[in-house]
Length: 388
Image (cartoon, rainbow, N blue to C red):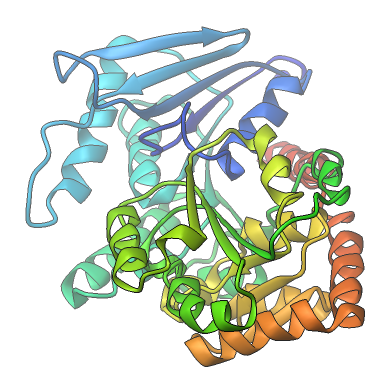
């Protein structure tokens, strides 16, 4: 392999790659784009707006080539978990015949695509799994789907050559089911960008949530707490930045509890705009529901809130609990309304505690810059490749 002229394929299963909140995927690809050792990056993502359904859109950005692949038609009864990766594999395979020094795949569905490209299409000898979440944990209401996803995820893990995961808890789980090498590189933050939020704008006490508006994210807990908090802080606000399937239900809840005028839904915004919301806020919210998903997740939010100088209120679960507890950057609670109310009152009325959490969060995040993390990650991949 020519170390100075590497070709990489990244299999992403994001359906809104260009419009979604910037997450780990974007940071990794942007870092590879700046790396002089990599000459070509092909990215596969979902584009179900293409017509006809088997059409593949190709977008060029310098050395990056984005392949937007339709996974339609969808099948009910859970069969789409298998049909969508097959559609992506077959349609990409028809329009691109490149070979690669290595393939990186994220999510079990992307891992399935990567496995087919490696084993069936012979596009590369190396498949790396970018392990961002414990995906069976998303399925809490149907045990059959939970178990099916567990089998799919474990099958992918056993077929890859290297696993890169986001936390120690997920590493231990992966090592339990596979004998492959597992490396840990946490989520991070563009620290310099988020320091813009240190110059706070004065205003009403403001709680801020940034991210996916999903039921598992616990975005409804502050809404349930607002009627009680308003009695103590009459002009308190709850600002929600993001989008997701739980948005409509959350809006209805604010009306039902008569707190709609205290909640602002800001929609999706680019990563560069997040500091503008953070500098107007007082407390960052990460009160996830205590489900299997969150036992293993290392959330970007707690690092980003800290980088911006915001104390966090977080559920005491998994990597989130360990990060906040270790760095003393906020208040940990059980997932219930009364503890949330107490945490808000504690932070807003105890200025010494508030300032300590702010400074601790900044100090911790300063060691979590994406550039440092991703450069170490890249070097680890190169070391692995040199051994093959």
